[in-house]
Length: 455
Image (cartoon, rainbow, N blue to C red; front, side):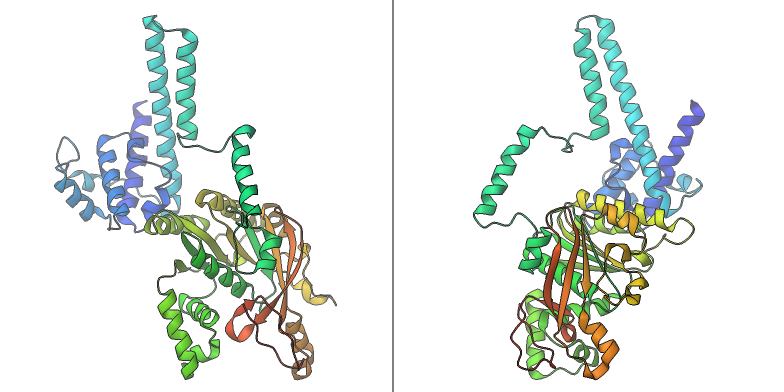
């Protein structure tokens, strides 16, 4: 028992060591443990200081924590001895990737201690003989159950309790208030009907415009919904993503931005974009080989800094995320898609996951994608709420016929799976020079020209 106690004290010390030595560590565990979950009083005091500093947006390294404890008159033998930090540093270290797991051990141990305390309290009340046995048993069982699910758990509800909300949603929809999340493309929105928590997979062959489409969606959501939108770019650096966003929003050709050759009109549109959208609530994270654990860490931090709400998450793209190589790639992809879906529910927003398609598409006369073209498709098909393919016939026309190809500048968004409604195809305009899609197909006098689109 003593050895077991010592081991868990060391687990707590390992968690605190990582928190004090690694920027971003708090965001990985902030949703797992609170100060009271630590057994040792001095550990509770240290973690509370880390938490308070992180919430205030300040560094929470050892120096900052010790300064805060000194200010609170807690850096003493009764609370937390000054030499204890040096003592903790002698404990064998854990890896950053295992931090969340060790925090979960701390939480599990906390639940165990509290369960024992509730049981002992129940035994005491039964021995006193002043209480009904059934009442004591129910109180103990309820208290222990609440430790597992938490006081704010809303995962279960009776049908009768849900009916009021359903009636309100129907009435709102009848009055013209949308019950689903708009991406800025009404015809597509009416087919997809995206809800918070949905995992939306957008898949295509390279150069079809899947990144552009999701960035168009995210920028629209960022402008018109409460909360911060987050785009994880595993493939492109932040600067390239920003250039594409500016091109789409300001309608300035991407090549002009890259070359720095903007006309007077283009400079005017660019300045309006900068003025209007400087405070756009959209965060771009570019990190190669990013793991799902690191995505969670970023999201916790961004949510905290943004005032507690996210509006949408985009990940570009699945197959080049970290931790997917090796013998069990399909199983690992399944873990990623399931976790991303869970993150959507946890943060209360849709998750847009980009995915590549198999090369088999290129071998068929009709190159419109189908479900089996998804690479490692079994788990993706199962976990996704919506699967949308991007197809541009122009791309293949140009590839096969070169300059003689007749172009219409359109794209097909093929909804192959939807848990929210019917499947089908929506045609959008594709303005490749602006890295954007548009709503309306205009009349054309010359089919050899790629038209301008509105929307």
